[in-house]
Length: 154
Image 1: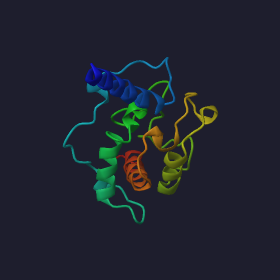
Image 2: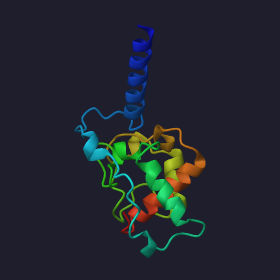
Image 3: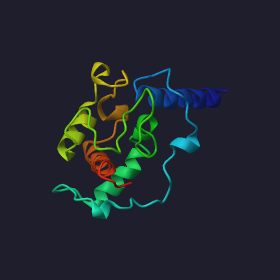
Image 4: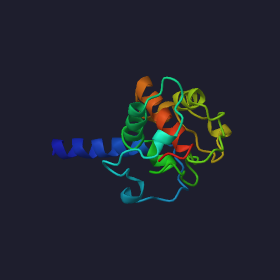
């Protein structure tokens, strides 16, 4: 009985973290796991054509992709391909930046500090680090991946 209670509590806690990482947003449409899951084993293509900022490497971009689709929980609000989710996260694949100038440094800053609900176009807050508890180095890797998404990489 105790084991079942712990499993139930763990399941509820994981669900709550995913929900809170996007700041709630009860009106957003539900997506299936298949629609939001990142393709496994898929290398980041086309990034070699993207001019990376000084200090950013392809290894960081690939790590960022894995974190984006995993521990970072970014895909929950921004979608598996970064195209955004209605009522939750903005599109990260276009050149239109809402909270920064699109530079790598400003992307790092936005992910690190989050976005207040009042400044969000969806009205949904983005907690610092997406509410995921990733490290500062992981934030830099995610920012490297997002930087390439907005410049034609995927």
